[in-house]
Length: 77
Image (cartoon, rainbow, N blue to C red; front, side, top):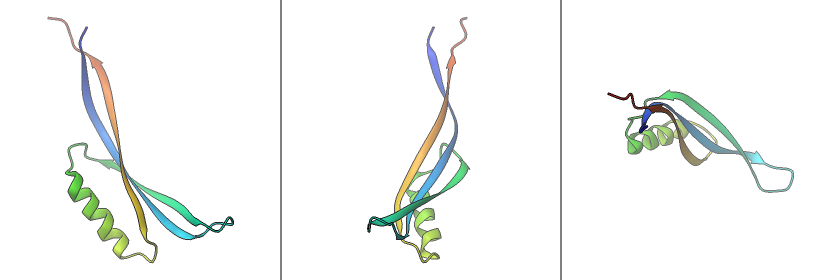
């Protein structure tokens, strides 16, 4: 049976520096924005992340997009 991939939602994960870790390197933390539309433009998502962190004292380290997809069996005709 063929399988169809059905996009559900996405999560935008923003990693940022928040001080210095005990070992001396940067301490990395993250914030997640849930329920992002799976068809959202990737460039626009990155621009939103950069705009949000332009308001913060902490520098943005990485922008990660995690997609959730349901795998469904295609019904036989």
